[in-house]
Length: 158
View 1 (spheres, rainbow, N blue to C red):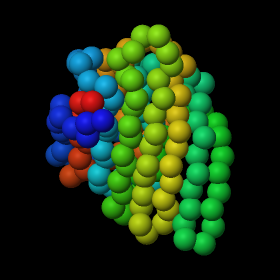
View 2: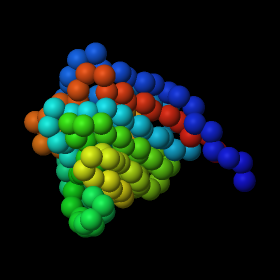
View 3: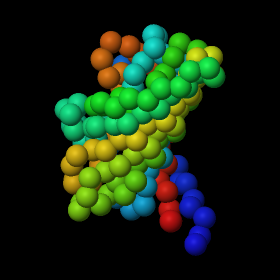
View 4: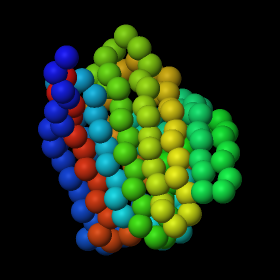
């Protein structure tokens, strides 16, 4: 089996703080997508990724586990993909079979803030449409990503 290759599709580096970052016109020619977030936030963010302008929280059920070095926890709910903090944070989100039109989309998010918490989240988008755009933002719409934060999107070649 060949080793997957990541092809850079787009990178956004914020020149000023913003509440959302959008990638549009995503080509359907790759197996998976990888979204890498690196930076800080104005306050602690429970972040979300919305596909094709679908902002209905119930369409994104998740299972999440977190730990801080002394305590571990897990929970489930809707529409929280990653945590982003005021100190350096990073999240890597894999969106599997994003261009398939015969199944719901599944995603795995791994994120960390070494000063406070690390975690992983499994998410399902309850829609069979191909993902052609995505938006990253605070779930509660009240926080911003700080200037200098980077958002990179990659296509995975099988």
